[in-house]
Image (cartoon, rainbow, N blue to C red; front, side, top):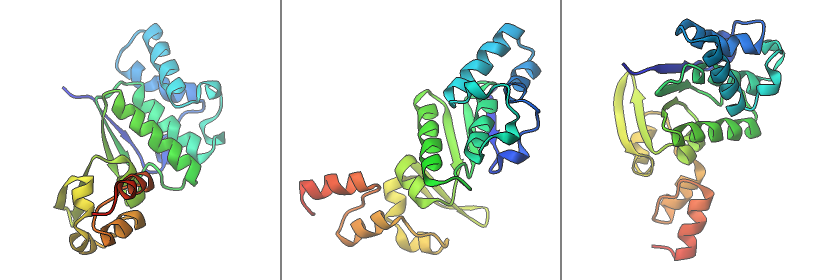
Length: 191
């Protein structure tokens, strides 16, 4: 079957151990792996989220961003094919949000299927290839990010607004998802 990992919106509801190391080794141990494999997976997961040096620390002494990355590491240690992240940038400052989203992008590049639940339209515009907009448990929109953000009226019906860069570009007759995308489009000439 498919192995699935879930990262909670609030890492404090997911973390339980007295040491970071214990947190990332539990999953592989529950899978019945050898101690050597448990160690390899834990070290790899901590390295990937840049927390290897924190292995012996109390998880609750870490910053919110570090705790969020630790929750991701705990999931990575079981090597899931699919990772679901519930609002992974909530409560993080802008730098931590960018770091978390860069980590998520890297996980996708490595072959993980990523499902990110978010209300952050700027994060969706920069990092998502496909959007599924839900309202009342029903799918309202489903498609490539650019196409979904082009449907402002349907988004508004779901109390969502595209990021400002999308709104500005739509006013000029095209859809740019990021400032870089906007600059490239302008450099080629307006439609």
